Every structure is written in structure tokens, then in C-alpha cells.
Length: 357
Image (cartoon, rainbow, N blue to C red; front, top):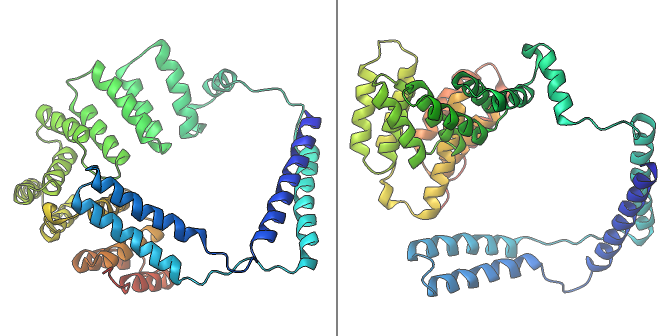
């Protein structure tokens, strides 16, 4: 094993030397054009070719050409500067690369355990099961539950597995576990609602057909499923039936008592639905961008303690030219981070970002 790692380290050093020498030889060549320009030119040609063959709609073609053209102009205007390290410094750079590789190998031999036996997953899972489940991390708990459910599949087991997978940032696995759960207990509205929310998390907040079907099933089984009703109404407005979606949201707000904290989210959804441009007017590129921004907004609703996320959201709304939603997000972030001036400064700069033309 030690011989293998020594050979691997030497090969890595040799590869680094070859790459650096080739880069040093190619970078200062006079008259060399940035290869990025050829990439964007080929993109423009391929876009036209796809459109001529009927594989791309005219609106999609225009959006794609505009984006590729913008990147081409940006690359053409950028002042390309090659690597101009003096010849006398290059041996030192190679020596530094070699020293780093040898130091990593030496550190592994001193601090690592090259002779340690393998630890099969089954053995680790058995050790986790014999300890306290409350001490396990979400991925470890999910592994234990998966093994247990192979022997004894139960509805609650799959529900707990879905929760562990969700906490492990694995919404796809959480959705799979919930599909197993609803197959065993198709009459449980709470499982259908959890499945719909998991699919929403997987799609970045977009109400996909699968998510809509799961949420609709939850409402059929339990008309008071508030989270399912909320996202169904939001999806209805986003799909083009703005009036129907807003009416559903207002009906949901009327069913809640005054002072309920969920009213704030409903008011925000109503404001976003009424201020958003019609779905038919948005091109493919803008639709994709709006979906990404909507996904970021959904993530901040679930986890609002994310200052970088709030800065990105405010900047995104500013770039899109969506003043009302930019101001609403900025106000929420100001209230949350009023005692942190460095974040407030970033938020103000983000809000002042020029909208894209």
C-alpha cells in the first residue's frame, strides 16, 4: 500500500510538471487569441443550425442567441493577459509543486493509517444500531433505517427515513421513502402532503406535475391541509391562472385566525402572484431565471437565517427589474439583520444593482 501511494504521489508531481511546462510555453505566444471566443462563436452557429432544423422555437432561439452574444462580447472586451512568470521563477514553481506532493505523502505516512483494515458498511451500521440513535447524524440514521426497513417495512419507518433523508439534504431519497409510505398507507393525507413538499424541495420550489398530484391527493383526503393548499394555489397562479390562484390564497388566509404567522407567507405569495408578469409573456430564458429566483425565495422561507441568501435574492430581483419584490425582500432582510451593519451594507449594494437590459 505504501509503495502504491508513493508511486501515485510521484505520478502526480510529474503530471503537474508537464502541465506547468506546457502552460508556460503556450501562454506568452504572441498573437494567440482567447479560445473562449471560438467556443461562443460555435455556440451561435449551433443555435442557428438547431433552429433551421426545427429543433428550437423562434423565441428560444432569440433568447439563446442573446445570451451567447452577450458572453461573446464580454469575452471579446475582456483584456486577456497570459501567464508571464519570469523564466527564473519557473523552477521554483515546479519545486513547490513537488514539495507539496511529497509533504502530503509524508503527512499521510506519519499521521495516516495505511495498514488499517477496511470498515465495511454493514459493520458500521451495526455499530450505529448498537449505540444511541440520538447521537447519530442524519445520514447515519438514514442508513440504519434503510437496513431495518429491508427486514420490516413499516409506514412510520419510511416516514422517519424520509425525515432523515431530508435533513441529510437528499430530497430525492426522501421522496422515494415517502412513495413507499403512501403505497402502504394511501389514505394518510399527512404522507401525501410530505411527499408533495419533498418534491417541491427537489424541484427548487417549482410546483411540478408530480408535486401537484401529491398535494392534491392530500387536500382530497384532508381539506384542511394548509401547506398543500398553499402550494397548490401558488402553483395555480404560476401556471397562468393568476386570478384563480390568488382567490385560493385569499380563501386560505380567511381560514386562519388573525395574528397567525403563516399569514405573512400568504400575503407575500399574493403580492408575488399579482405583481408577476403573465406566464405567456415570459420567454424560455426569463422563465428559467424566474424559477431559480423563486426556488431561492422558497429556501429562505424554510431557512431564513441565511444572510448570503438574502443578499442574492435582493440582487436577483434587482437584476430582473422587479422593484416591488426587491423592496419586500430587502425590508424582510433589514428587519432580520438590523443589528449587523456589514450585512445591511451588502443588502443596500445588492438593491442598487442595475437591472439587465
